[in-house]
Image 1 (cartoon, helix red, strand yellow):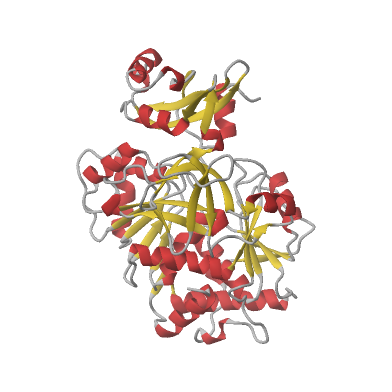
Image 2 (cartoon, one colour):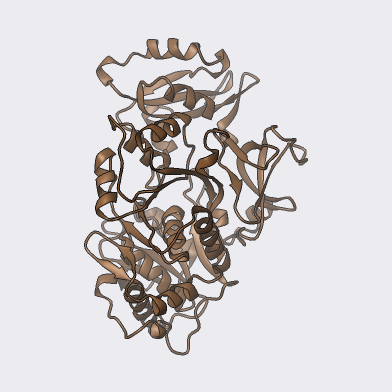
Length: 498
């Protein structure tokens, strides 16, 4: 799928009444969605939006966000999604960096009192937008939509590993990623995926466009669902799949006391973070009819990069799969040479889905987009068949007193104790050893939790160099909307940051 816009309009003409998006209180057909996007595109053009200009998008409801996103493309503009949960100063900083011509904002989106005065604001509400007759009129008169090879989106990274950077992507890369994932999942028009991550994250956008690629539908719900409640929601909405982070899957399978069958549910996509092996095993027991796809992705490739199909889950335990399409992943040693099969190196990525670069960051772009491909900052290895294992980020493989320690290995060992409902291990600076691992755990039975017993059990499975220097008990692991642990908040809980 080279053009998301062309695909949407073609489907709106061919299947106008087919459901595209289900929200809490409204269903949007392909034709209705295209018509609303067209109406908003007309408003953007009427406001004087120059073709190729950037439009910042501040919306947290799925219909408001996705309709506005497509509307910007129909108007020939570039979408800049903003995280609505950021503090006002952070949002102001992103707006300054993005320099948008307009800010498209939904009612109530963003922090209270946030009022950017330097950017003209246009109100977006998908439910209130007027409709036109047919999808052919969705493109504003005298304005061509954004082309496949033009800049279509500037997606800011989360900043969990540094300052946020604006990833610049073309529509061909965005649509191409969605099409390849749809083909791997074997999606058809009858498929409908449930998403529970905010729409402005790469994962939310990717799931929506992946289902759109083959004429399917998306159901979006705010809030974090648990166990039976989420499965009941999936059944009630007629969903055939779910897309989310490992944390979503953990919170579904762990509370289940017996295997559960959900009518129509056939696949589950887990991406965005490391998927623990014990969760894979629990899923096979508790959701025996569901095919689990483990995925690895990057904002810099518009979403997914590697996919491990269900048939390989047991044979290649811990792998994130093979690269999609003609994308290539190569582990490289410190001297730049390709690492032999099985040897760990930094993962470099090359292929047609790569970003153009980081917005107004020529030095950072040059350091990231090398002659060998994009430096991911992740470390891992491949096998002889090209399957990829991600062992962690640069900070996840630490040297403790001169010995290499894998943070992911420690997390797996802690989870295998069956004492905790959630586990995160971070590397913390140490004046003597350089770095030490600190474990943050949510005890399954808080009243009976004993650090001494947990450490004693860990010593049976971990070498001394991998033992956590501390185990910090928390009531809940703070996570982003996409399920990633928030390092700064955890360090504050441990007293390592003010």
